[in-house]
Amino acid sequence: DHLTMCAKPVLEPLSLAGIAEFIKSGRCRSIFCLTGAGVSTGAGIPDFRSPGGMYDSLRPELLTATETQRRMMRADPVHVVTREMFFQNQFPYMEVRRPFILGVQSQQWKATISHWFMKFLEEEGLLKRVFTQNIDGLDYQTGIKRQLVTNVHGSIANVSCEGCGREVPFDVFCQKVKTQIKDIYNVDPTAPKESSEIRCPSCNKALVKPNTVLFGSSLPGAFFEELPALDEADLLIVAGTSLVVSPANSVVNYVPSTCCRLIVNKEPVGQDLGIRYGSWAVQDVWTGEKSCDEAFMELIQLLGWQEKVKRIQHLLPESNQELIKRLGL
Image 1 (tube, rainbow, N blue to C red):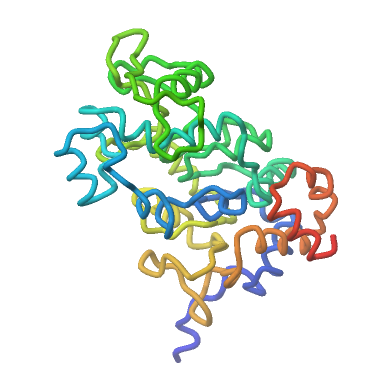
Image 2 (cartoon, rainbow, N blue to C red):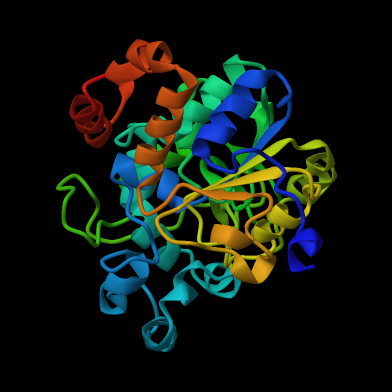
């Protein structure tokens, strides 16, 4: 009959409480994470694709560019971060990203409880890898081992020349951004009135930038090299991502069918990739309509890891402090 045809759930109960029990049981030895913008929103980092985000509020007329280039950006704001545009003119990318680059340097944004949860997994010897689509580098603020993090789309805090590959120290680069790139947002009175090119110390081309992947460029090879290891996953945590950007979203299909997948996102995602919700679920658990930080706090309580949170509470962003107060931790 129909019921016997249905696959048996990989976990009993197939719920957040079930996952907490699984993590504590000793049977769950290999945890992988795939993260997106949602794990950083609690830090106050603007999400490019949301209303008010970069694509929504772009004003090409303020950028140092030709009229033709401005027309292209007006038609589609994504042109700001294409390889083609950057190789013609570095200024649109630099001017739009200026506050983000300098904000990352000054640690204007703090790692959230979502980032710290991955650090806690590492402390327990359970974390095998974090694949992050974010470029903010907040993962590293927790002191997580760098070799456990794969920056699928690159990272703001690593800088090199797109032409010859020469690496440039982040602080040296930031000093040049501060003094050579104008501020289109009018928040920094010390910024220059006009932008001047930041050139590579090796090849002298104006192609130095953070190692974020431009549209039209290929992803770092490391991402593809790390995928086969997902074969050994006992649990995959998918957090704060819409799962629409490929090839990062393919991570969900590299885990075995016996692997539990925890979906931490305000709305259901990835149905087209085979993620199942409600009574159809076999290996998937959704934390429901709550933020990543709220969902991870709930899981932390189920795991009895409140002490871990108390230890780092003073390092958390304001929104997380309020969440902890509300929970009466």
